Length: 273
View 1 (cartoon, rainbow, N blue to C red):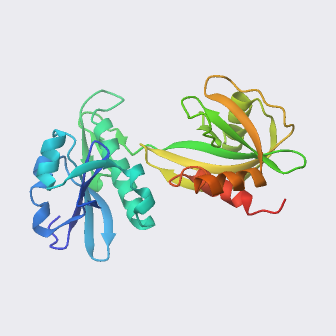
View 2: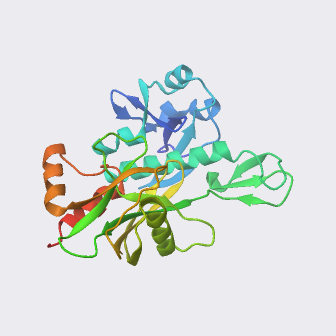
View 3: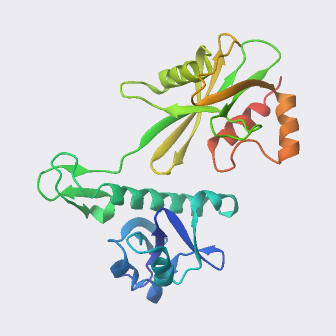
């Protein structure tokens, strides 16, 4: 914090602060009042020789937070991802996740005493017992399910609350005592009534909303019979590559641009029928 090259990223209740449509990444004299207005700064790392910190202004009203940082507005990170460089989006996601964790881990889950930040904000120590608290990560699986026979098709679902023509991949959280592949099999069976056998890892994505890790898979169904649960899913459909390419032409993209589902679908479309 004593470095003259330090930079500080202010956030307010999980939102990024913007000035003139640019995310604030404050330098030098602009950061002096921020730690007093918010919580203890969280050290994110070094950008060259510049230490980068995040500071959470959530204890303030929105108006006071904007005034303190000389910002125009507070915007959710997911609304900004499409126009941010990957590195900037990653740093903001890191800052958002850590600040959220600090707000939700103010007390010890073992004895109920207050906790205090340590190790640059990457650990919280109980003030009464020896318990150390670390940022939690909640793993979830997201899966592109392929049909077992020709023509080549993949399964997309319309989730409860989604629009009438809005489809996405199947996803769900990993349960205690469950490996990732079995989480895929369980989620697909529970939600869509589809039994899958072969499950293959594809890629992963940090998902700090607030603390997720999305692990992407491709799975092959044993049958194309479906039966939605009617709770999380309203409808499931098998789509051919031609149908998805037509939807992409009409919509400009498939899936959410800030989500790994876009990558999983696009990589499947790149395969030969």
